[in-house]
Picture 1 (cartoon, rainbow, N blue to C red):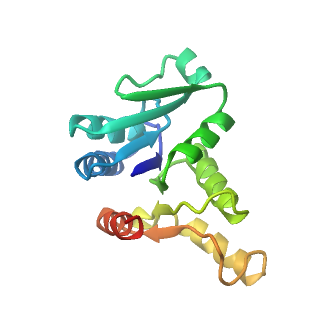
Picture 2: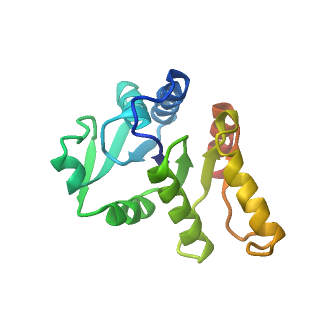
Picture 3: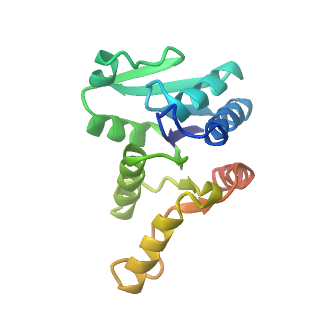
Length: 180
């Protein structure tokens, strides 16, 4: 299975969050899956991809030319797709991946997460998306969705919706059970 991971590229985040990348990357490789990610250096992106490679896994990077020009191209990809823009990166990752995982992140992570949710909502794909709500990181987004549902901007039962998990163990179980 090709698992796209969206996450922070900031090195300044707390170590406990960076360790999530270590653990997830290792699990992806040891489980025989392929990591698909943004192909850049920094933060959770580096930690997840390095852990996958160190565990013998395949790592597919999808990186915009602008990231390469900025000197942030990761050197650990077994497959690399160079694209022209962030929009093309999102589209390519959606096409390549079998499912999506959102670790904690910032605007870029949220952009990628909402892009997958919106494209799934309109039927462009049926690939599952898992949001790791580690220590309640995404509680605000969950409340936002509840508010939209209460005001009927979202249906009570969405045909396509993210699956929230609170721990890596829950994530591994969901990835294993939902994608067999």
